[in-house]
Image (cartoon, rainbow, N blue to C red; front, side, top):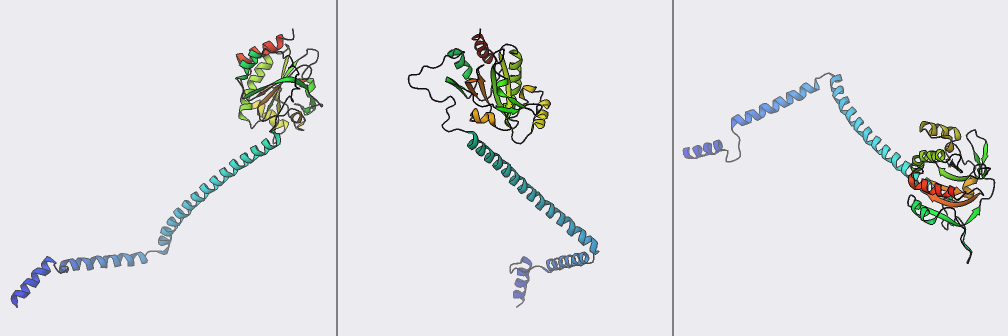
Length: 287
């Protein structure tokens, strides 16, 4: 019997049966008492201290949720702006784009092409500056008064800018404040106008803005140092109805008789050497 007790004590010391020594049990109980004391202490804290801890956690949670909501709102706004721009582009194309576009009409069978003032090789070289260049086989006379608004708000006629005593050609450019390529090429149009002033070529940039009036367009031009040659607005769309476009920027070269000779689609540097060669050849044909 004595041997059995010794073996049992040995097993307890070695923790073979999963029992804990008395010292370990005492430590565990002490730990539980300490936890219980801490819990009671927290309950005995002043109410405002517990509220403060709760408020900090609440503020963090609310702030995090607000950031998530703000991010979602910004994403929705971005999608709305993108969708609005896409819809506006589709509507503009639907209104202005001509699927079966034939800007100069069709040439009669057996009819000889009209003699154009610029040699074909120069036109071909200049055409590389554009998305597309259309050449009139049979130039068409412009019809209608083609009235638009000038800087002073008074109506102006397109026929005031071509022909006349000097027999001027007119380069008519269509642009808008929301069209980045249009705005980028406007200064070069001004340089072209100055280079050929009094030599038989005039330059006119006509805005097709819907959302801006003449005063706002004037402020837009002044802040960019662009001259009055672009201070015109096709408010009644009279000019666009006669001169079809598939997009902007688009420029039309009109001869002194009011006939469209060339249509240039896309932007370019109108003061670059290829342009100077083209217009030099154009004006030398008058002499």
